[in-house]
Amino acid sequence: NAGVTQTPKFQVLKTGQSMTLQCAQDMNHEYMSWYRQDPGMGLRLIHYSVGAGITDQGEVPNGYNVSRSTTEDFPLRLLSAAPSQTSVYFCASSPKHLGQGPSSYNEQFFGPGTRLTVL
Amino acid sequence: GQQLNQSPQSMFIQEGEDVSMNCTSSSIFNTWLWYKQDPGEGPVLLIALYKAGELTSNGRLTAQFGITRKDSFLNISASIPSDVGIYFCAGWAGAQKLVFGQGTRLTINP
Image 1 (tube, chains in turn blue, green):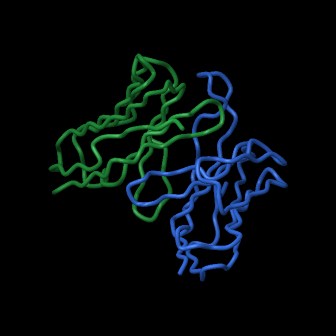
Image 2: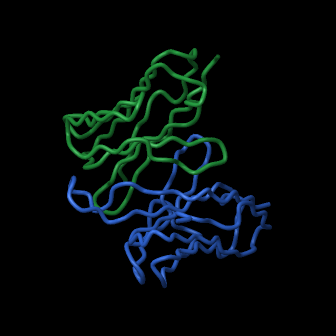
Image 3: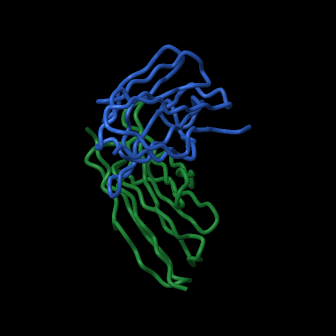
């Protein structure tokens, strides 16, 4: 299994440009999510999906769109890039757990990240 | 929203020393996760905790799920150079959102 893959690894955009960050997983996980990581702030949830056709907002959704047409893919779209969106973006996926604890999901597996710079 | 307060923010230790870091919240969490992130990589899961009071080990790492369900700690014994990195605590807020602490940056002097 390749696990969680992300493309591109690096990207530079000009203010106002749009682009899509790709994320795919081959583990048949129901749950997928996008985070951004900024210095000193940990990882903040942008959007998440609990299955194909279902998406919801996280902590910092403004300026980003997502869709989940298949179990495997969860692309993140920047509609009109702004310098404030300069960050490292991580995609993650989780299997639905059976048994331990009341949470619906347990471990999250992360991709290698996309480093985005908006000029 | 729910937040996790992780401390310390950074640690500078000598190789061979033990390390302790913790995570607290004003809200109850049902699952606690501890991750390590190496430079240029995504976080990697170290330990998962599912029950209040649970103590779990993974090699030189030991983590505990606080009895109040509002805190957790991670200990690393006999640190080695490859332990360098950023350690994050995380907890599931409700059923569908994973919340992260700000991270503890560990630096080891040989």
